Image (cartoon, rainbow, N blue to C red; front, side, top):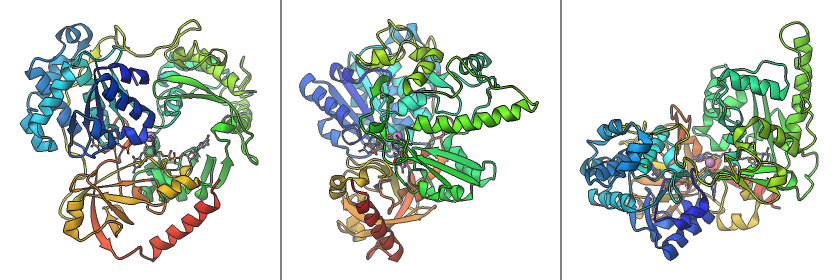
Length: 571
Ligand SMILES: Nc1nc2c(c(=O)[nH]1)N[C@H]1C(S)=C(S)[C@@H](COP(=O)(O)OP(=O)(O)OC[C@H]3O[C@@H](n4cnc5c(=O)[nH]c(N)nc54)[C@H](O)[C@@H]3O)O[C@H]1N2
Ligand SMILES: Nc1nc2c(c(=O)[nH]1)N[C@H]1C(S)=C(S)[C@@H](COP(=O)(O)OP(=O)(O)OC[C@H]3O[C@@H](n4cnc5c(=O)[nH]c(N)nc54)[C@H](O)[C@@H]3O)O[C@H]1N2
Ligand SMILES: [Mo]
């Protein structure tokens, strides 16, 4: 997030799009409700589903899935036409304005209505509400990013925030609600193909030299950008990738077009999976490395508002499980012995111990200190300081208090850049053969592939199985009643599940989750990727729905087996 969570209760207008906040970020959701109820903040929701927070919204726009660039350009168009933009801010702090203005010229509310289905006057109302608020905050999540145009969607939201002078102020910003407890931290640690810690790019020789020296490897670090996770599975199928080490991820269930993922994993020469449970992915592994869970190890998590917080070991891990860093260190020590042997045979550099000890960490804190020494945004953070509470990066030195919101006075890159972006259609849309939009996501009661939450009895009692959401009008037309079994079919596969009739989903659209391995929704989804973010099109694919009398043999057996497994694992 550019800004902090607490600012939600201290702003004049909140625009939420592509985020089912009340269910997926319930604490943030509560703060939004309080901001509306007690602080009289205006709330604009833009979401194809009638999410819970719609009850609190002053304006709800229901776009067709995958039409975000169009409606955001429409908002920009209205704000420009009605002279509601912040001219001083745009003049002093931004560049590229004319390019953006030219790109949005044709996006009149009427034109946008034809693309998105949003009534022109509602769009005007939302534009005025956002632009006239002294301070306005944008919150977004996966409904914006999980598209082949995800990066363009985010840039478009940045255009909107900058046009109204809402970046670099308290109670403003463009705020992605990060999903996992530590997804921000994982990215900060360089778990991305193109950067080292703190987003220091791997293609920059000075940065590489700093890390080579700091790590004391003696081995030249590669300046090559690696593959994104979603590019790896096709690479395996093309024979370009032979081995994989998967840590804390269950792609057999969570990745788009998952039949391909399974096929790829089965083709590998070596698959290692490091997880806290024996997941569907771990079952395909040659080697499974049991890891300790969050409660069983020391470390830090960095949350959605860039706040680094301590995690403390409360329990001993079961059996042979070790903290992830201990497993990685143990493997690295063995691999680096090999490297030394190979390199001392004459080709290349000799490994030598560094000031930190070469892969000889004694604690998570030692690793953190090495990270802080090599990472400007974390430089001022230490375990000792974290004892007194979390710190938000950038925190460049040990006296710095941390940074609640970014781009104050000046953008990280100097001037904020407007982008001229035009709308294109998602790659797969409903047609005669596959007449429904399929949208996928989450419900409150389960987490992702269910590997953790489906092991808890109470969650299973509330949400024991997948329910495909369908609008009552569509169901009525097709003779489908609440609880009936349907088969959902896309160009890539099919699943079976019971139906829940609800107006949360718009007519012409069905919604399902990826929480239930017996209903692996990702066999249906499209693995077309955003060219920059490499994120798949999870939110738009085309499907056909057929009523079936009950689960066919195959589906039924799977279901039963999995329920038994789940029961056996309840803890
Ligand atoms: N209970 C629970 N909470 C979770 C998780 C979980 O599995 N369970 N997972 C966590 C993780 S890792 C993440 S990333 C977050 C995800 O949090 P969210 O992104 O809030 O979750 P999703 O269910 O993916 O919902 C995305 C929203 O986008 C909307 N949407 C769909 N298509 C479009 C579109 O084309 N345009 C727009 N503007 N909106 C669209 C959907 O209707 C939905 O409201 O949740 C986190 N929190
Ligand atoms: N159709 C569809 N698919 C989606 C999405 C969608 O909206 N629609 N959303 C996507 C998104 S945003 C996300 S984030 C992904 C999530 O996809 P995944 O990350 O594959 O899903 P999880 O079930 O969270 O898997 C995390 C694994 O980490 C393990 N784990 C937990 N703690 C630890 C630990 O401390 N150490 C180790 N080594 N392992 C641990 C858990 O047991 C679990 O198996 O799914 C994506 N897939
Ligand atoms: Mo996520």
